[in-house]
Length: 316
Length: 126
Image (cartoon, rainbow over all chains, first blue to last red; front, side, top):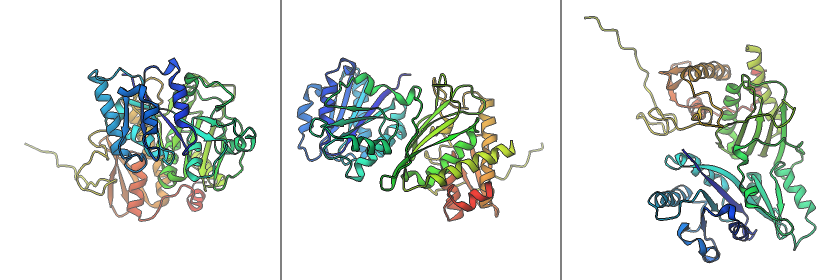
């Protein structure tokens, strides 16, 4: 059964989501793409900009994706699915959801993965976040949007050429997502939408452990193979208590009994199905985990995970 | 004719909703597709593909979870190969379907948080 990937384009108000989408939709790689947008404070402007994809576009009537997301977004996607099955709309092979600038990305991702109908037809693809180089990361919403991104696009770099400080700030929040500068670089849709979640993760760079307010990222490494069962017990326990503050956890694990690594990827309470990678990306056989957290201590997380994994080792 | 006595089945409650009836969220009648029990398909790491592998993983989960739960004086056991029973020392029991429900149910039974970052828990496991 083929799952249709769903990509989320998020970014703060005025950060260039629709401009990016317009630019991407001209790319032949996105020829079979349906787009779901919503209007919020822009009086349907997005709709007019994107009218050429009329049949496969649904305009969410209430505007705000973040409040009634479960009902409205899932209904909109189910409607699209139904129309596709009946041949009313072209057989799209990808769905792009453009969220409002104020939306928390998590409920949108959660809807796709948890809805009893949608989860059998769709799977989550990359989350693409636009960051406005002029206004930067001034709001809590934009910090969260950057934290959950799989791909980052820095927009308006022609208006703010000196964006090195902003890039460094973004890197502290999200050390591993590839970043494009919209004004200077060509953005190939294929690269942006390529499924990093379902393909081998590249090796993580050493994440700087410097706080951005309460939100910060860090990388943990563990020697030797770890017990998958105990890791699952630990991560579910952590997310049950602190899921709201674990903006993201991502990594490759050396799992006992598995010759190739397992990639895990979670956003708050939501954890993607673990990916059994075909091969190690390099000679490093250590488990590597990157956390982006809000107000949690690296020291506590590291001590806790080590204690859980050690108790298993002693018992084994 | 001799009939085997019926095994006493504990009163089961839905951990997530606190209801006595079964509910779709608990997944007793249909798994919710938790990431630790992911449906086997190409590229996905799971231990549910083969029945023996699934049972071995469930058994390991009970053993490992009990190493953590003993700190709270709770215990976990397999129930019908489909769900798990989480019990207090006094026998108060909840049925749980997956690891996320386990921690929700544990906190409900205890009336306090189960925090993996709690120094007392870390100390007891180190």
